[in-house]
Amino acid sequence: MKAHLTHIPKGKRIEIWFQDEARIGQKNGIVRQWARRGTRPRQPADGRYDSAYLFGAICPARGVGAALAMPFADTQAMQAHIDEIGRTVTPGSHAVLLLDRVWQYLRANCLSNRIFETYGDIIDAACEAWNTLTAIPAVIQSIGMRKWAHTGQS
Image 1 (cartoon, one colour):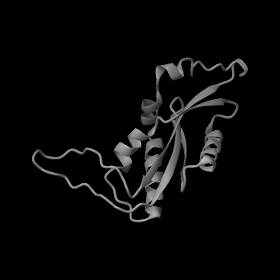
Image 2 (cartoon, helix red, strand yellow; image 1 turned 90 degrees about the horizontal axis):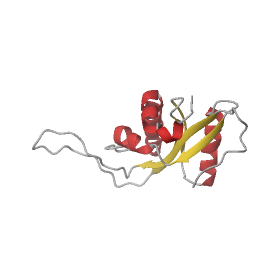
Image 3 (cartoon, helix red, strand yellow; image 1 turned 120 degrees about the horizontal axis):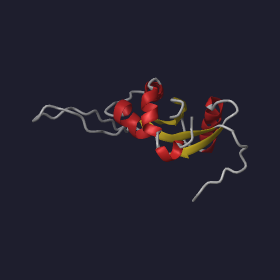
Image 4 (tube, helix red, strand yellow; image 1 turned 45 degrees about the vertical axis):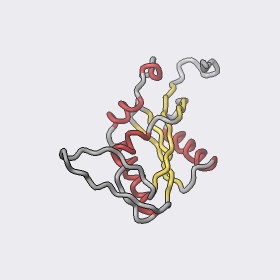
């Protein structure tokens, strides 16, 4: 499927954004970790079920992001996230939003092998993970830079 953007005036800046949402909670995933040969590192596990959703989007060309931590993943939450992205897009620009490209880095580097005691701890961890990502524009750029998506971007 080829997208046609003929209705956008010539010379109008277009930003490419990559968006994803993820459930973060007490039933957290376990990932591989380095350990000395012959040892078995401890990995935390939790049987409780509190969770929250982190909606996040990145613009690799600018090295910026926009995110919200929400109690549910539903239409209203997605609309609030789209509104948040809209506030972060460069004024006067259009944004193209590509879905489902962000979370592998956050899960592997910030959110795995943890136990969250309370719902507040889940929200704090989600926000901390997002702030860690957005503090390093080079990581945002490496996650989202795809030649096909940025041809002609300044």
